[in-house]
Image (tube, rainbow, N blue to C red; front, side):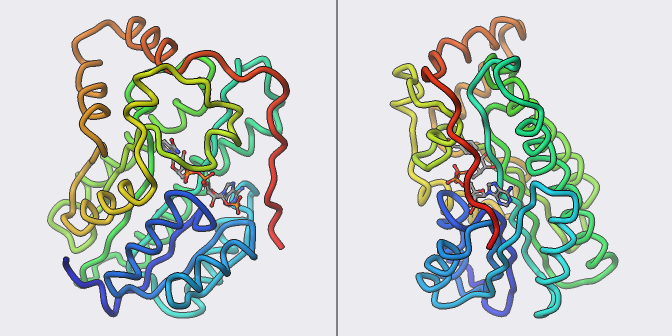
Length: 271
Ligand SMILES: NC(=O)c1ccc[n+]([C@@H]2O[C@H](COP(=O)([O-])OP(=O)(O)OC[C@H]3O[C@@H](n4cnc5c(N)ncnc54)[C@H](OP(=O)(O)O)[C@@H]3O)[C@@H](O)[C@H]2O)c1
């Protein structure tokens, strides 16, 4: 296991799920941590389980969120590793969600991610020390997904953006890695009003710890794009062989129907 001792990592969405697991994985490799999300109590708990961390409660779904997080993070020293993990989805037809929720998703899943990347990349321009950028996309990036149209489009954006960045940065000390997890057992599904999935989605479900280990290994290896899990890899590869409408239809079959009733309210206001 390669050491990240001496490196300082900023992880977004670190209060639960994949982000919390990535934080623990980075801590196990010796990195010091800056953790951000909206819920301070949960961040404090994760920080303790990592042996201590700087904690920044902030809402990246707002216009100023990324600047607030970045400025608070660099006030404690330079950032060597940036993991853009915070994100959420809504498993509902587009005409069933209100605009404020859609706008927050666009801001969090794409705009804040790009702004943090911009600030991180600019801060290392021309510097020789090894640095790592990781953006968490999804296997939803590989085809359109009915009932998750905006979410899957946001993840397609993250994938294209990160892969372009990876190629731009080739040969430099900074690497950019895109992780495309499939279904992972986290709070994501309840928050998205999802979970009545077909058997393929259930059988391929991974733990946050598995995804985190694969993500950090990919980051250290300077990989371009990694899809955790064999079934997920096959699924993403096979969309190349079929028309786009058919891939979209298959994703609808695999995900099943949205849960009945209203979407759970967005929770977790920054303290
Ligand atoms: N679980 C899956 O099946 C799956 C599959 C593919 C990709 N992903 C991606 O993996 C990433 C992590 O999701 P997860 O599965 O670990 O879900 P999760 O447990 O719900 O974690 C989401 C994280 O994002 C943070 N967050 C949400 N809204 C935020 C906001 N407005 N500002 C700042 N932070 C915010 C949450 O913290 P607070 O609530 O404390 O703010 C939480 O720490 C997401 O980008 C998701 O799209 C997940």
